[in-house]
Image (cartoon, rainbow, N blue to C red; front, top):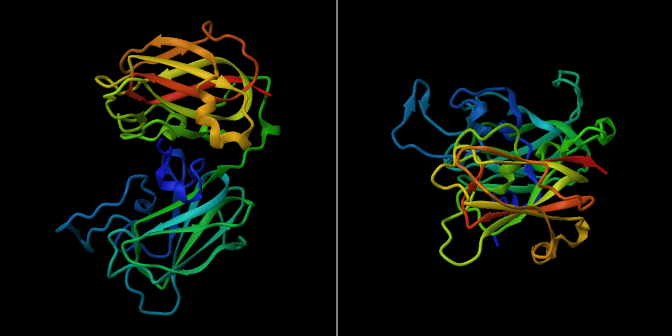
Length: 333
Protein backbone atom coordinates (compact mmCIF):
# COMPACT_ATOMS: atom_id res chain seq x y z
CA UNK A 1 0.00 0.00 0.00
CA UNK A 2 1.39 3.41 -0.91
CA UNK A 3 1.01 6.69 0.90
CA UNK A 4 -1.39 9.17 -0.73
CA UNK A 5 1.10 11.99 -0.34
CA UNK A 6 4.67 10.90 0.29
CA UNK A 7 5.85 14.51 0.39
CA UNK A 8 3.93 15.27 3.57
CA UNK A 9 4.34 11.87 5.16
CA UNK A 10 6.49 13.00 8.12
CA UNK A 11 3.38 14.77 9.45
CA UNK A 12 0.81 12.20 8.35
CA UNK A 13 -0.75 11.37 5.01
CA UNK A 14 -3.98 13.27 5.67
CA UNK A 15 -2.41 16.72 5.35
CA UNK A 16 -2.27 18.93 2.27
CA UNK A 17 0.18 21.63 1.30
CA UNK A 18 -1.55 24.86 2.31
CA UNK A 19 1.05 26.78 0.25
CA UNK A 20 0.03 25.13 -3.02
CA UNK A 21 -0.62 27.84 -5.65
CA UNK A 22 -3.00 25.47 -7.45
CA UNK A 23 -5.30 25.93 -4.44
CA UNK A 24 -4.83 29.70 -4.33
CA UNK A 25 -1.71 30.22 -2.20
CA UNK A 26 0.47 33.17 -3.21
CA UNK A 27 3.87 34.64 -2.40
CA UNK A 28 2.95 38.26 -1.63
CA UNK A 29 6.20 40.10 -0.95
CA UNK A 30 9.90 39.58 -0.32
CA UNK A 31 12.60 41.83 1.08
CA UNK A 32 14.81 40.92 -1.87
CA UNK A 33 14.52 38.56 -4.85
CA UNK A 34 17.48 39.64 -6.96
CA UNK A 35 18.59 36.19 -8.13
CA UNK A 36 15.30 34.26 -8.19
CA UNK A 37 11.66 35.34 -7.69
CA UNK A 38 9.63 34.39 -4.65
CA UNK A 39 6.92 32.71 -6.75
CA UNK A 40 9.23 29.84 -7.67
CA UNK A 41 9.47 28.83 -4.01
CA UNK A 42 5.79 27.74 -4.03
CA UNK A 43 5.98 25.70 -7.25
CA UNK A 44 4.24 22.38 -6.47
CA UNK A 45 6.73 20.45 -8.59
CA UNK A 46 10.11 19.33 -7.14
CA UNK A 47 12.96 21.79 -7.67
CA UNK A 48 15.29 21.19 -10.60
CA UNK A 49 18.83 22.22 -11.46
CA UNK A 50 19.74 23.17 -15.03
CA UNK A 51 23.52 23.27 -15.59
CA UNK A 52 24.71 26.18 -17.68
CA UNK A 53 21.46 28.15 -17.47
CA UNK A 54 21.98 31.83 -16.61
CA UNK A 55 19.87 34.97 -16.76
CA UNK A 56 20.78 38.68 -16.61
CA UNK A 57 21.47 38.52 -12.86
CA UNK A 58 23.47 35.30 -12.73
CA UNK A 59 22.89 31.56 -12.37
CA UNK A 60 19.26 30.56 -12.84
CA UNK A 61 18.01 28.85 -9.67
CA UNK A 62 14.71 27.09 -9.11
CA UNK A 63 13.50 28.80 -5.94
CA UNK A 64 13.61 32.14 -4.16
CA UNK A 65 17.08 33.66 -3.80
CA UNK A 66 18.16 37.02 -2.42
CA UNK A 67 21.42 38.82 -3.13
CA UNK A 68 24.39 38.71 -0.73
CA UNK A 69 23.54 41.02 2.17
CA UNK A 70 26.13 43.73 2.89
CA UNK A 71 24.39 45.32 5.88
CA UNK A 72 22.66 44.32 9.09
CA UNK A 73 19.37 42.46 9.05
CA UNK A 74 17.94 39.44 7.24
CA UNK A 75 15.65 38.65 4.33
CA UNK A 76 12.06 37.47 4.52
CA UNK A 77 9.14 36.42 2.32
CA UNK A 78 5.42 36.72 3.17
CA UNK A 79 3.02 34.14 1.73
CA UNK A 80 -0.75 33.80 1.88
CA UNK A 81 -2.08 30.30 2.53
CA UNK A 82 -4.56 28.89 0.05
CA UNK A 83 -7.19 29.11 2.80
CA UNK A 84 -7.13 29.53 6.58
CA UNK A 85 -5.72 26.39 8.11
CA UNK A 86 -4.04 24.64 11.02
CA UNK A 87 -0.46 23.73 10.21
CA UNK A 88 1.10 20.44 11.27
CA UNK A 89 4.55 21.15 9.91
CA UNK A 90 6.75 22.69 7.26
CA UNK A 91 9.31 21.60 4.70
CA UNK A 92 12.05 24.16 4.10
CA UNK A 93 13.72 22.69 1.03
CA UNK A 94 17.17 23.90 -0.06
CA UNK A 95 17.52 21.44 -2.96
CA UNK A 96 20.35 22.45 -5.32
CA UNK A 97 21.36 25.39 -3.13
CA UNK A 98 24.84 24.45 -1.91
CA UNK A 99 27.07 27.52 -1.52
CA UNK A 100 24.15 29.92 -1.35
CA UNK A 101 21.64 28.47 1.13
CA UNK A 102 20.69 30.36 4.34
CA UNK A 103 22.50 29.11 7.46
CA UNK A 104 19.27 29.43 9.46
CA UNK A 105 15.57 30.23 9.12
CA UNK A 106 12.49 30.88 11.24
CA UNK A 107 8.78 31.04 10.44
CA UNK A 108 6.11 33.37 11.80
CA UNK A 109 2.36 33.26 11.19
CA UNK A 110 -0.72 35.44 11.57
CA UNK A 111 -4.47 35.30 11.08
CA UNK A 112 -5.85 38.43 9.43
CA UNK A 113 -8.64 39.46 7.09
CA UNK A 114 -7.12 40.67 3.86
CA UNK A 115 -3.32 40.80 3.76
CA UNK A 116 -0.83 41.72 6.51
CA UNK A 117 0.12 45.33 7.13
CA UNK A 118 3.00 46.98 8.95
CA UNK A 119 0.94 46.89 12.16
CA UNK A 120 0.17 43.16 11.90
CA UNK A 121 1.28 41.13 14.90
CA UNK A 122 3.14 37.95 13.97
CA UNK A 123 3.78 34.99 16.23
CA UNK A 124 6.70 32.61 15.93
CA UNK A 125 5.67 29.06 15.00
CA UNK A 126 9.16 27.81 14.11
CA UNK A 127 12.08 29.23 16.09
CA UNK A 128 15.35 29.97 14.31
CA UNK A 129 16.62 26.63 13.03
CA UNK A 130 19.90 25.69 11.38
CA UNK A 131 19.69 24.66 7.72
CA UNK A 132 21.83 22.50 5.46
CA UNK A 133 22.42 22.87 1.76
CA UNK A 134 20.62 20.69 -0.79
CA UNK A 135 18.33 19.20 1.88
CA UNK A 136 14.72 18.91 3.01
CA UNK A 137 14.08 20.22 6.52
CA UNK A 138 10.84 18.82 7.95
CA UNK A 139 9.94 20.89 11.01
CA UNK A 140 6.82 20.32 13.13
CA UNK A 141 4.48 23.16 14.07
CA UNK A 142 3.03 22.76 17.55
CA UNK A 143 0.65 25.73 17.41
CA UNK A 144 -2.97 24.62 16.92
CA UNK A 145 -4.29 28.06 15.96
CA UNK A 146 -5.66 28.71 12.49
CA UNK A 147 -3.50 30.97 10.30
CA UNK A 148 -3.93 32.80 7.02
CA UNK A 149 -0.34 33.93 6.28
CA UNK A 150 3.21 32.88 7.05
CA UNK A 151 6.51 34.79 6.94
CA UNK A 152 9.72 32.90 6.22
CA UNK A 153 12.78 34.63 7.66
CA UNK A 154 16.22 33.59 6.36
CA UNK A 155 19.39 34.57 8.20
CA UNK A 156 20.97 36.53 6.74
CA UNK A 157 20.30 35.85 3.03
CA UNK A 158 20.43 33.10 0.41
CA UNK A 159 18.14 30.75 -1.46
CA UNK A 160 15.27 28.38 -0.63
CA UNK A 161 14.07 26.03 -3.35
CA UNK A 162 10.64 25.16 -1.97
CA UNK A 163 8.50 25.96 1.06
CA UNK A 164 5.59 23.71 2.05
CA UNK A 165 3.13 24.12 4.91
CA UNK A 166 1.31 20.85 5.57
CA UNK A 167 -1.99 21.10 7.39
CA UNK A 168 -5.77 21.05 7.11
CA UNK A 169 -8.32 23.75 6.30
CA UNK A 170 -10.00 25.48 9.24
CA UNK A 171 -13.63 25.29 8.06
CA UNK A 172 -16.46 27.17 9.76
CA UNK A 173 -19.36 24.82 9.06
CA UNK A 174 -21.77 27.24 10.72
CA UNK A 175 -21.39 29.46 7.66
CA UNK A 176 -22.10 26.65 5.20
CA UNK A 177 -25.69 26.07 4.11
CA UNK A 178 -26.19 22.45 5.05
CA UNK A 179 -29.56 22.38 3.28
CA UNK A 180 -27.75 22.70 -0.04
CA UNK A 181 -25.77 19.74 -1.43
CA UNK A 182 -22.05 20.22 -0.86
CA UNK A 183 -19.13 18.53 -2.57
CA UNK A 184 -17.97 16.57 0.45
CA UNK A 185 -14.90 15.40 -1.48
CA UNK A 186 -13.56 18.96 -1.64
CA UNK A 187 -10.05 19.46 -0.28
CA UNK A 188 -10.99 23.05 0.65
CA UNK A 189 -13.64 21.70 3.04
CA UNK A 190 -11.22 19.24 4.59
CA UNK A 191 -11.54 16.02 2.54
CA UNK A 192 -8.34 14.02 2.21
CA UNK A 193 -6.91 10.80 0.79
CA UNK A 194 -6.34 8.11 3.41
CA UNK A 195 -4.71 5.29 1.43
CA UNK A 196 -4.33 3.85 -2.05
CA UNK A 197 -3.12 0.71 -3.79
CA UNK A 198 -0.71 2.61 -6.05
CA UNK A 199 0.15 6.19 -7.03
CA UNK A 200 2.99 5.71 -9.45
CA UNK A 201 2.02 8.66 -11.67
CA UNK A 202 -0.04 10.89 -9.37
CA UNK A 203 -1.43 11.25 -5.86
CA UNK A 204 -5.13 10.58 -5.10
CA UNK A 205 -5.13 13.86 -3.14
CA UNK A 206 -5.35 15.59 -6.53
CA UNK A 207 -8.76 14.00 -7.09
CA UNK A 208 -10.07 16.47 -4.50
CA UNK A 209 -8.63 19.67 -6.00
CA UNK A 210 -10.91 22.42 -7.38
CA UNK A 211 -11.53 22.84 -11.10
CA UNK A 212 -10.78 20.33 -13.83
CA UNK A 213 -7.33 18.86 -14.22
CA UNK A 214 -4.95 20.99 -16.27
CA UNK A 215 -3.16 18.03 -17.86
CA UNK A 216 -2.66 14.27 -17.51
CA UNK A 217 -0.28 14.84 -14.59
CA UNK A 218 -2.98 16.59 -12.56
CA UNK A 219 -4.85 13.59 -11.22
CA UNK A 220 -4.45 10.16 -9.68
CA UNK A 221 -2.90 7.54 -11.97
CA UNK A 222 -1.63 4.06 -11.18
CA UNK A 223 1.00 2.01 -12.96
CA UNK A 224 -0.10 -0.63 -15.47
CA UNK A 225 -1.42 -3.57 -13.46
CA UNK A 226 0.23 -6.86 -14.42
CA UNK A 227 -1.52 -9.04 -11.86
CA UNK A 228 -5.15 -9.93 -11.00
CA UNK A 229 -7.34 -7.46 -9.14
CA UNK A 230 -7.85 -3.72 -9.43
CA UNK A 231 -6.52 -0.48 -8.02
CA UNK A 232 -8.32 1.67 -5.45
CA UNK A 233 -8.07 4.71 -3.21
CA UNK A 234 -9.86 5.62 0.02
CA UNK A 235 -11.12 9.18 0.61
CA UNK A 236 -12.22 10.66 3.93
CA UNK A 237 -15.08 13.08 3.29
CA UNK A 238 -14.91 16.60 4.69
CA UNK A 239 -17.94 15.72 6.77
CA UNK A 240 -20.23 12.71 6.98
CA UNK A 241 -23.26 13.06 4.74
CA UNK A 242 -25.91 11.41 2.60
CA UNK A 243 -24.57 11.36 -0.95
CA UNK A 244 -26.90 12.03 -3.86
CA UNK A 245 -24.70 12.88 -6.86
CA UNK A 246 -21.29 11.71 -8.10
CA UNK A 247 -18.89 12.97 -10.74
CA UNK A 248 -15.91 10.94 -11.99
CA UNK A 249 -13.83 13.02 -14.39
CA UNK A 250 -11.24 11.40 -16.69
CA UNK A 251 -10.05 14.73 -18.16
CA UNK A 252 -6.86 14.29 -20.24
CA UNK A 253 -6.76 10.53 -19.65
CA UNK A 254 -7.18 8.99 -23.11
CA UNK A 255 -5.08 5.86 -23.55
CA UNK A 256 -4.91 5.21 -19.84
CA UNK A 257 -8.36 5.82 -18.32
CA UNK A 258 -9.94 2.99 -16.26
CA UNK A 259 -12.14 0.54 -18.14
CA UNK A 260 -14.66 0.67 -15.28
CA UNK A 261 -15.14 2.35 -11.90
CA UNK A 262 -17.18 1.60 -8.81
CA UNK A 263 -17.51 3.19 -5.37
CA UNK A 264 -18.03 1.67 -1.94
CA UNK A 265 -18.82 3.69 1.18
CA UNK A 266 -19.29 3.46 4.95
CA UNK A 267 -19.69 5.50 8.11
CA UNK A 268 -16.33 4.98 9.82
CA UNK A 269 -14.97 6.02 13.19
CA UNK A 270 -11.86 8.09 12.39
CA UNK A 271 -10.01 6.35 15.23
CA UNK A 272 -10.08 3.11 13.23
CA UNK A 273 -8.47 4.55 10.10
CA UNK A 274 -5.34 2.43 10.61
CA UNK A 275 -7.35 -0.66 9.73
CA UNK A 276 -9.44 1.06 7.11
CA UNK A 277 -7.97 -0.77 4.11
CA UNK A 278 -9.18 -4.11 5.47
CA UNK A 279 -12.52 -2.60 6.46
CA UNK A 280 -13.08 -1.10 3.02
CA UNK A 281 -13.22 -4.49 1.30
CA UNK A 282 -16.57 -5.09 3.01
CA UNK A 283 -18.17 -1.65 2.56
CA UNK A 284 -21.53 -1.35 0.87
CA UNK A 285 -21.81 -0.39 -2.78
CA UNK A 286 -22.55 3.28 -3.37
CA UNK A 287 -22.04 3.17 -7.14
CA UNK A 288 -22.13 -0.15 -9.04
CA UNK A 289 -19.52 -0.73 -11.76
CA UNK A 290 -19.83 1.84 -14.51
CA UNK A 291 -18.15 1.86 -17.92
CA UNK A 292 -15.68 4.74 -18.31
CA UNK A 293 -14.86 6.85 -21.38
CA UNK A 294 -11.75 8.86 -22.15
CA UNK A 295 -11.44 12.55 -21.30
CA UNK A 296 -15.01 12.86 -20.02
CA UNK A 297 -17.02 13.98 -17.00
CA UNK A 298 -19.26 11.10 -15.86
CA UNK A 299 -22.28 12.02 -13.70
CA UNK A 300 -24.41 9.68 -11.60
CA UNK A 301 -27.50 10.26 -9.47
CA UNK A 302 -30.24 7.67 -10.08
CA UNK A 303 -27.68 4.89 -9.73
CA UNK A 304 -26.92 5.84 -6.11
CA UNK A 305 -28.83 3.85 -3.44
CA UNK A 306 -29.73 5.41 -0.10
CA UNK A 307 -27.31 3.70 2.28
CA UNK A 308 -27.51 6.41 4.94
CA UNK A 309 -24.77 8.78 6.07
CA UNK A 310 -21.21 7.89 5.05
CA UNK A 311 -17.85 9.36 6.05
CA UNK A 312 -15.44 7.47 3.77
CA UNK A 313 -15.54 6.18 0.21
CA UNK A 314 -13.40 3.72 -1.74
CA UNK A 315 -13.01 4.50 -5.44
CA UNK A 316 -12.22 1.33 -7.39
CA UNK A 317 -10.58 1.72 -10.81
CA UNK A 318 -10.85 -1.47 -12.82
CA UNK A 319 -8.32 -2.74 -13.55
CA UNK A 320 -6.07 0.37 -13.32
CA UNK A 321 -5.56 3.80 -14.91
CA UNK A 322 -6.03 7.48 -14.23
CA UNK A 323 -8.83 9.69 -12.91
CA UNK A 324 -8.60 13.47 -12.82
CA UNK A 325 -11.28 14.51 -10.29
CA UNK A 326 -13.86 12.96 -7.98
CA UNK A 327 -16.88 14.94 -6.73
CA UNK A 328 -19.32 13.59 -4.15
CA UNK A 329 -22.30 15.87 -3.52
CA UNK A 330 -24.50 15.33 -0.54
CA UNK A 331 -26.19 16.77 2.52
CA UNK A 332 -23.77 17.05 5.45
CA UNK A 333 -24.98 15.62 8.73
